[in-house]
Amino acid sequence: MQHTQPVIAIVDDDPAICRALSRLLQTVGWQVIAFSSAEAFLQRGVQEPPHCLILDVRLPGMTGLELLDRLVADGVSFPIILITGHTDAQGHRRAIQAGAVAYLRKPVDAQDVLQAIQHSLGPQVPEP
Image 1: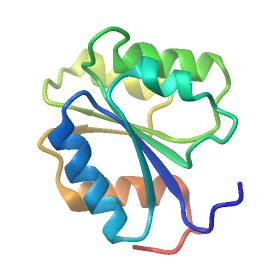
Image 2: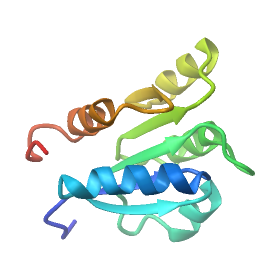
Image 3: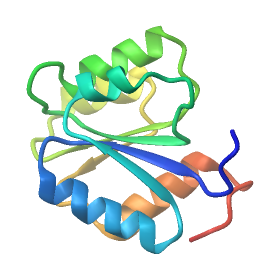
Image 4: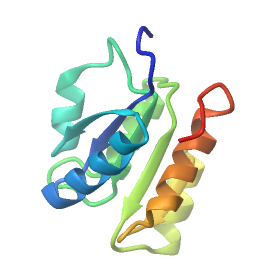
């Protein structure tokens, strides 16, 4: 990838969540692309995949878990962090088993999000 800074994709149907997360990530120098649905993310294509995806569990149409399953089946190599306002043990277990690197409850704590992204990106990316 040609970007000097990590590109973080956000998929959430709540515009306020997308704005808040976008601002947070941009303040530490990361590039952000936001989508209001799983379908919009898929339409973008993966010719240049993000370094990390923050994905809401409950979305209209294709859910976050369904998108996670599809991306894993397609062999994606970028980390996926799930966020939800409606946690349940079964959903958490399913997400982690499917390959999500974190499962965070809304309202998400800024430090938790930054740490989850940094951990998923590894040491090659400078700390925010």
